[in-house]
Image 1 (cartoon, one colour):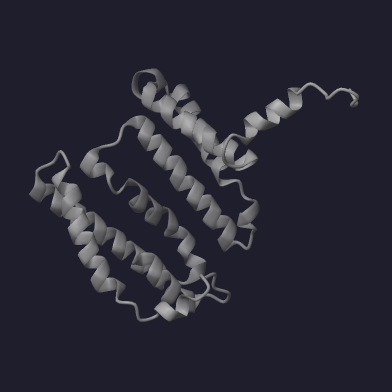
Image 2 (cartoon, helix red, strand yellow):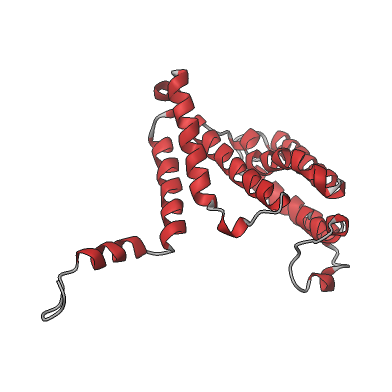
Length: 206
């Protein structure tokens, strides 16, 4: 709903809006009504699986959804030049919304923070007229994750609070996404290694 509003309401404030082709045909789509029904049904189903009591989980999730929706509306109605100050808050609400219901460990919080910074940096580049297509988002997230890890080491709580299998999984995922960003999807890095060490064909150049 917030992204829909961004393409319809917020785009009017932009000098050169970046919107999807053909968006005008959805100008009167009833996303507010249908989105609310979808959120209520799927939200209750998710809260039923939450470790918290159903009523408490439902009220908490409804508050989080409402807060995120308000943040989107404030962002979409703010002058484009000032949206940069609201963007990090919006990303935190989007990324950490499930944490009060399901909880999040130190490794997960570090990974989610790296994701927030990845999105925020990308938006800073876009808002200041840079080329986001050349920005390596996955590599940037890995850098932020490693920087946070080093800060944890210097703070003296990496071993007792952060290190563990969850941290190993998060770091592995960041590295995998970075490698995939550089070399492409699939097993292309392995193919490049095989090509590099392949024995030259008979009669070919050594």
